[in-house]
Length: 454
Image 1 (spheres, rainbow, N blue to C red):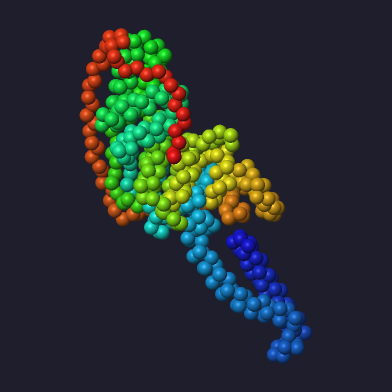
Image 2: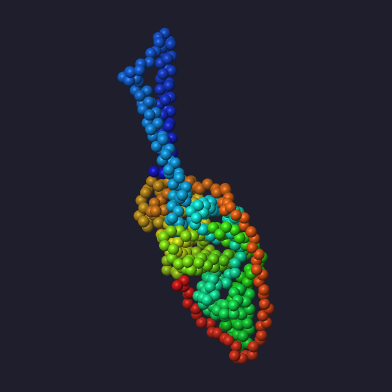
């Protein structure tokens, strides 16, 4: 039985004892008054046979309470201590490795729930990384490492630039909506840029401008249009390299990627997908971890980079990375405002689904119950009342009240200090006008297949 049921039973039992005691007291008072009116003295007998039935019932109730109350108190303490090690008092910490989907409208308590999960991770000595879409976590975790700007195109391993070029092409195609010819040209230019030892959008744009000039001189109109389209799409990303931002070096147990200062949705999505890819590379370099949670990743506004899809559509790169990282001991809390904004089939395969702040049972949870033939009708009837928290976990539906706001600040015990950003030296590249068919490199717009994670 749930905590609310035990509280109701205890309240009913106390009311019964009070009611019996009141009736017993009223009866004794009435006897005294009647005796005074008749001028008689009331004698109280100590024999059990002469004791009124009501007195015996009252005494038995008090004795039973004296026996049960300590047992209930000890049970409540044990259950409370056990709940401290679980998210929302239900989800075991080790099951966070199987991923958690967290839904709820604005102000329902999603961030408070995520902060409680972060607190559990710190207590269990598991590092945390947060993709902070709106900048909500920076002031909630004192002493954390805060990253506001990264070198997006820099490969984690310069000896494997070809694989990195494929993945960057895949990510940029997903974020910018590139066509297949654009993707192929981008892949070629990325490889050329990495071979020259550079890794920034300014150098990539210079190469594309050179290629556009060559194609224009050779009258390759299709290639000119492809290069123009790439330049227009990549220009806002190049402007981010000039943005001034201060990263903070703090405790490595918690790293917050603050995306709130990024000016566009495309840049935020690009940052998120690049960061997920870096996590994947980190996991692969460390090797298989075996059982156990090695790192917790909190993803705010996850619907922007782990996108919903139909069953016949291929998964996005964000979804593929999240699924792959489970095998390496990385647990994700994917947070979205609407239950329909994340792929439904992920709900079937994750550790828990948490829906906060809805009056009715969310569709994704109802479909899970129907899929697993769950038939606890009594609990389903309760879902039509006030907004509640619905947790599908371990094959069961748990219904709770709304989580309390997380008002305290997580203190890691260190002072985060600013990191001086390295200045990017931009080289002026003169675009020479080549002669037609003068041996300049030209490329036909071939089609690039969908790169995978391997």
